[in-house]
Length: 440
Image (tube, rainbow, N blue to C red; front, side):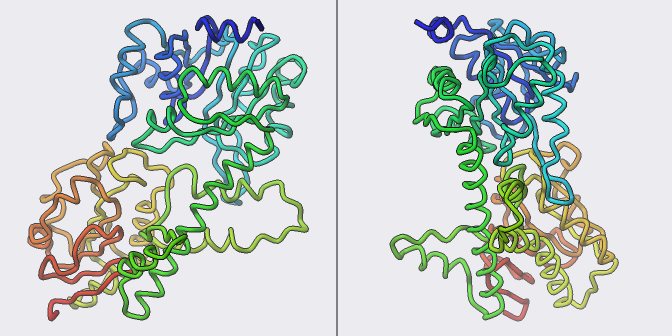
């Protein structure tokens, strides 16, 4: 038996996970729970200390993660450090760092390149290196392989086993998705893919499809681009329905009764680390002969939704004789996803900036984001309008009559279809939904 595969079978394969964020931390926990000895590499010393105390730095509702982390730290299966020298003993290394795009929509790989440079000197021949971060098609060949070769003096496809196995996690379902979602396992050689499949088989209870690294890169960026385009269609339909005086939510329900239709949810904007940038990653290395039109158009629609919400605020205030300039506007929710503390590419941040540009003062509340926690009634009381941007459970439990009673003016803009337009005597504006004024 191959000694590498035998080490996997007997859980004798030392593993390192670089980057202990929303992807890396649960991955490290899963391998440790499966019986491996895992070291996590994290540059944030505060996070290192927190993890080594058995405490999760990830807030929000994340079922099972805090308990699993505490268990694997206490039994010695997982420890964290900022020292890359800890990778010297590892025979499998997983890289899970952010891979954003810059203002020019081109990959901003500073974190990835830094990892490759820091990891290289500590790599042993025969190590399996898996990049779980979402990357532009061609990145394994153009960035990862040459980066590791330059830093280690090892040959990428002869001395190392390089794989791209993109994560398919979702905030709020991190452990569940790691265990139950199928994975595209893209090896730069067939043997590399085979080894990665064997490793993931120790906890993944779904298909592990061995393929090429390029195919895996395209698969991940395509699936998120698909979602972004579909959401853009739903958002544009919301704008169409508003313009025609219809209710997009009723339209969506009836459309989806037709077989093979799946109209997505419209809303106040698309956030998170993936959808706003993965469409651009997909197009990064395409030739100048390709003139993509649909994907950039979808990005423009989704990026425009927070600006549309600001227009709804202006319209709602106008209905009570108030101007946006000088108004105080409560923004309910700052995370990009409900019941999460993840603020990456938050549509609420875009909305707040737009409100400021219009002369208003945004007052932000979010029960999961530390700097925006506080007493909601007290915060809302001096505001002229409220905008619901995130479907946090706390907001869904609100009595609309109470919310209107707290406000200085009864103006509510619903960016996530959280309230019934008829639930209160208010000025109600919803994305794609019915309008309601005090006169009915």
